[in-house]
Amino acid sequence: MQKKKGDANNARQDSPVKELDEKETLMHYNAVLIEELNSKMQLVLELVKASHEETGRRFASMEEKFERRFATLELALRSFKDETDKRFSAQELGFRGLKDDMADMERRICSKINRIAERCDNHECRLGALEANQ
Image (cartoon, rainbow, N blue to C red; front, side, top):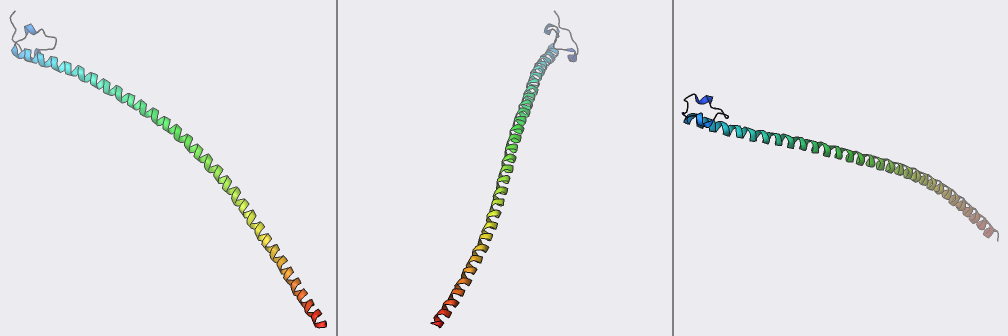
């Protein structure tokens, strides 16, 4: 079979090699390589896209998981803070009450000391008068 002469641009991947001349054979070979590269690149692109989608799903899942955990922690922290604030408020009220009680006791003790001091003064005066009369 005689090879036909023709334009190298007419050579395609599905052209029978027997019908191609040297220039067309090189074009055919290059077309086959390009087609093979295109199919491999398509596969790579599909794998990259699938990997990207899986990574996106995993990231979204982790983000959701962390948001739930942080929300739980924030709720627990807020609850702990509220409970602590209540306890401190109760202690402050208790300390104010103790302070008031201590101030009242101090006033009463001072009052009693003053009365005792007055009585002592009165007794000293009376003793002095008794000693002077003897």
